[in-house]
Amino acid sequence: MSGDGQRRDGRTPPPAALETLTARFDPSTIDLPRRGARVRLGVTGRGEWDALVSSAGARLERAGDRPDADATVTADAATWNSVARDLRGGMGAFRAGRLSIRRNLNLGVGFLAATSGAADPERLEVRHVRTRVGAISTFQAGSGTPVLALHGLGGTKASFLPTMEALAPHCRLIAMDLPGFGDSVKPLGAPYDAAFFARSAIALLDALGIARAHLVGNSMGGRVAIELGLSAPERTARIALLSPSLAWLRERRWVPFLRLLRPELGLVQAAPRAVVERAARRLVAGAGDGDGWVAAGVDEFLRAYLQPRGRAAFYAAARQIYLEEPRGPKGFWTRLARLAPDSLFVWGREDRVVPIAFARHVERTLPAARHVELDCGHVPQLERPRETHAAILDFFAQDARNKVPPVRAEASGDDQGR
Image (tube, rainbow, N blue to C red):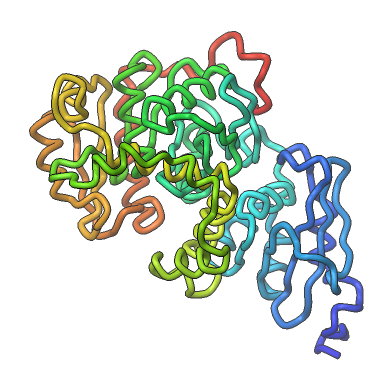
C-alpha cells in the first residue's frame, strides 16, 4: 500500500486527478479516429490507467495487460494534481518538462487540450481541415490577425507549441502539418517542393476563409514561406524566417545521381524498423535523454517516416531541397531579390544545417530584410523561445500601418476548423 492508502499494482480506482481530467474531456476540441483512441496515463511510481476517448467522451480503465496505447502521457502525482486544479496546466507542465508525451504527440497534446476545461474561442484545438489538396492537420489557438506556422523537414506542427503559447494571446496562430508529414494527407507522386507546399498552404488559408496572413517558417518551412511571399504576395503579410532552408551555393556533386534516383523508392523500407529507430535516435542529439521535447519530436518523425507514404514524402522533399538551382533566371537567389513582403531572418550562431554564413548572402540580396542572431542551433523557437518570440512579436507589431484582414466574409464549406 502507498502512503495515500492506494495499492501500487494499479488495481485500485485511478487517482482523483485522472478522474477529474477524464470527466471534463471535451471531444469538440480534437478530431479523433472513428474507432476512438487509447491514451495511457502514467503516474510515476503508482501505475498506469487508460483513457478511452471518442466522440462520445472518455472513460478510464486499468492499463493492465492491454495492447499498446496510441499515446502515453506520464507525470508524477503532484504534477497530475496540479494539472487537474489548473484548467490550463497540462500544456504548461509539458513545456516545463514535468510531463512527458510519447508515441503520438498530436494525440497527447489533443488530450491535454480537450481536458483543459477551456471553453473560450481562443482555446487550443487539434483539427483536420478539408482542403482541395486533402486533409491538413492543424493546431489552432488565439484570435485576431492570422499567423500561419510552417515546420521543417521531418518535423511537424508540434515544433511550434512554444510559439502558440507566446503568440496566441496576440493573434490567431495556425500551425499546420505540411502534406506528407505528421497527420496531414500524404499524396503519392506529389513533387513535395516549395511550390507544392506553398499551394497547399494557400489551400488551407482558403478553407479557413483567411485572405492574408503573417508567416512563420522554420528550416524547410522557411523556404515555403519565402515561396508564398514570391508567388502569392497578396496573401502574405510579414514573414518571420527561423533558420530558413536556402539553395546551396557550394558545389553539389550528387545532383546527377539524385536526378536519377526516384523518391518513390521510399515506399519500400530496406532497413528493419528497429534499425531505423536506433539510427534516428542516435543522429539527433538528446533524443535518448529522457522524455523531453527532442525525444517526442523523434517519435513524431518516426511515426510518419515508418509509413510508406511518409517515407516517400520525406525523401522527395529532401531531394528537392538539394536539387534547387541557386542561380540563373529561375534560380533561388535570383528570385529571392524580388521578395516583396517585409521579412525577418532569425539565425542560430551554432546552426550546422543552415550556417549563419548565409546571412551575408541574404543581406546582399535583400538589403531591407531584418536580422537577429541567437546563441542556438537550427530550431530557434525551441532552443531560444523567449528571444525568438519577442523578435517575432515586435516585427509583426510594426505592421500596424498595413492592416491584415483576419477573415474573409465567406469561408469555404470544406472548413472543419474554427
